Length: 135
Image (cartoon, rainbow, N blue to C red; front, side):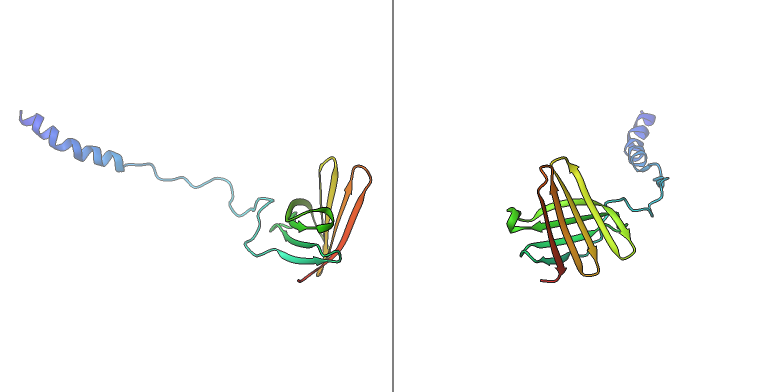
């Protein structure tokens, strides 16, 4: 009886110790310094006003290989249309294209405080507008 009482008393303590005994976490083996292609900083996108009264919010990824725009283009019936484009920077000009849709190709080009939004549809129709940072 004495052994059974000791075991019953020690059982909760053993359960508590085994619950607390865990393996130490292992550090990831992949480097965390590299940023994924689509990583964006937390800064607000740059606002562009265009010659046709369109409004564009444009933002480049941290590594400059991708840009995202939110475009309001009244002539096309767009209201805050989001487009993600791939490309990069060469010198002081950034050029991005999205040709994933077989019906339309989007292009966004930036240099200093100027931007150009261009689209070309599969039927040959084209639309282009010049933009400038600021409202």
